[in-house]
Image 1 (tube, helix red, strand yellow):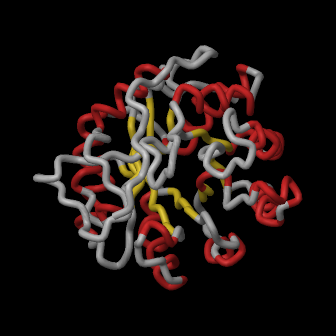
Image 2 (image 1 turned 180 degrees about the vertical axis):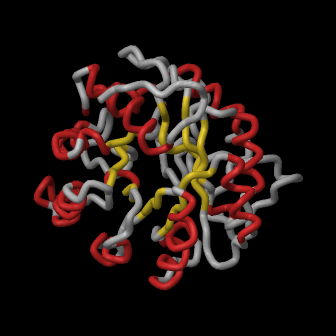
Length: 297
């Protein structure tokens, strides 16, 4: 397994205040290797990225809600994810990896634990078997009736090879990491224009994450701002934000998550817009049941 950079343990506080009930819409966790062994060929494993470490990072940022996304290191064994959701509590949701090997009983356990989404990973570096079109359709047919959303990780590919598979589905679809952008092409990148077109449909969402990853300008990654602001202008009610902690497959230097919160403040300088991205939109999609359902219309 290649050596990847480690997450920053001492998270800095954001420069701008974080609204109550703010949500980090994507993190990953790892459980005890004795209880939750990873795949032998896993592309990325960092065992100290525990749910407790994630919660400490969130406390520093002022984050009260989150979505824990199944790591490909566990394949379709969701034991570590289910345990993490139990520890994190009702302010947290899960997003799983579902294929034909996941039986109905496992789906039921996942749903009871708080899983509300299924992610399709099309990133070749993750060493997972890329979903086939028929697998995508079969999985969608099983999880959409549960009220789950679908999630697409499409880094490094042409999104038009994948997104038509979900045409016509009556469910929400989230595009990870701002889409498979190519910063060198600027906002005229056809991949970017395609995602903007999808946002016009009313059930497609985009997550403002990994703005630092593909930046060609380097810290503080301001070349990501033009993309984020256009997404927000196009569909402010269907934009999310996530840290992607602990930043899998990062060659380094790994960003301080407090600086990523500061980057969001540059994406959305208006505090009301940031609150919509951090609070209202996640509540709409993830339907948290922790006793609060704020109206941020």
